[in-house]
Image (tube, rainbow, N blue to C red; front, side, top):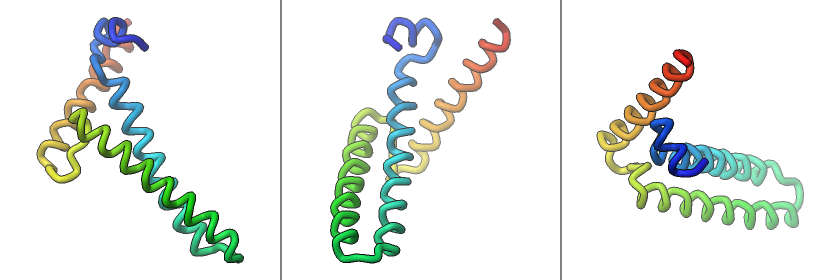
Amino acid sequence: MNGFIQNLMGMGGMTEQVIATDFLIAAKAGVRNYTVALTEAATPELRTVLREQLRDAIQTHETITNFMMAKGYYHPHELSEQLQVDLTAAGTAANLAQQKSNS
């Protein structure tokens, strides 16, 4: 979705934030899943492969986190700021749902 359409719909930069948030959640799940798989691995070769994939997943998580922090979408060290970001996102989503139901 381009910026013009996002602004027209009242979304502004929300699409980028939503995509980044979904990606971060998926990266967290990947780290968790690789960790569990690593503890269940039956062979040293498999553990080696899973460790490498876990390192990559952790790096991906860090990259997404840094991107989101730089954009102001994520404030892991400032709970009050993160709460405000979350409330704004929730309000925007509620407004979009309301607009859609009124159409």
